[in-house]
Amino acid sequence: MVTLRADVDVLKCNSNINFHERHLSTLSNNELAAWEQLIIFDGITIQILESEPGSFANFRGFDRSLLPALWLSTGFRLGSRILVYAPPNSVELHAYLKLKYLIEQHLQRIIRIEILYEHLNGNLIELIQLFEDKPEQYKTLCEEIAQQPSKDLYPKYHIDMLKRNMEVITKDVQQSFVFPYDMTELHRRELQKYSDRLSLPDISNNDKAQHHFFLKSKGFTDLPRLIAVSVDGSLIDTYEEYTNVIKRRNINQTINSPRNIEIFAQAIIEAINQLKHRFNLPAFVKLDSSGAGGWSSMSPSVHPIIYDFEKDQQERLVYLQQYIRATITDELLPQMAVVEELIEPEKRPGDIDADYTVCGFVLSGTFFPTSINLCGTENGAYV
Image (tube, rainbow, N blue to C red):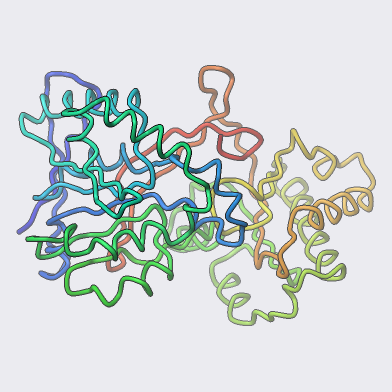
């Protein structure tokens, strides 16, 4: 039996070490081999594939894989390798290594982590060793990357980096588990020919409506009230209704046209009204039930008119139609929106609304949580 051991108290930095053991006996032998080495990368650009390369300029060096790799590495026999587009700045890396040291002291063992950066000359550089052995050279490297044009960062960057350096990254490793920020069909398609040495998580599904109704159908009744709104105008309240609507999807109903926007907007306003009149609940609209980040959220503080029952319904409808036209510029509208019970968020220091997010991955249909994060939000979108 293989066991993944993770210290649940380690970040509290107390002297009492309590280990939580998660048994992986339900996985096959081939799947268990995936825990030998972790290969992790962020790849935020894949989330905005339709954007122009210039849109990626602000994301250069933005990397969310460092901290997750720190605690996930403890569950892999050979540790982890983090693929980065840009080296972390010296201050950030110093703080990171200090935290790594504290965790190692509590675990009483070394955490094996490499941060791999591919230089313009094609050389693969391990950044932790460079930072510790030659700090001035590391600083020069950071200054060099800051002057690179943003066009060098593109959606497939980390995938291509892995493919170019596959032999080095997987040397002497039977199987590596690849953990991108968000597993997509692109990852599966590009990396499937390396299945002899790479294991991948299941492709993620970020459909809030599907998740809600599935949990509800399995007896999870203590959930915030939610009404899903199909682009065809249907209001959905059960998992059976959801699956039936998905089965009869018609691409013509999702075309971004004035008539389809009107149907979509009317149904959303009706769902807001139902939450109020049937359940006496305030509402919060998310125009796209799929995806994360909050780009489609319509916070009542920013869009009060659509939630104002003293306003004429036609006035509310016109506002929502205009907002959809201005916000959704793709050829297709979202297939589903959600109108959910408004839950007032907790406050973080600085009067920042907080949102709890459970992170993890799905492997062979089983969800493995990796962390629970407290993310700041502003008007329903992450900050």
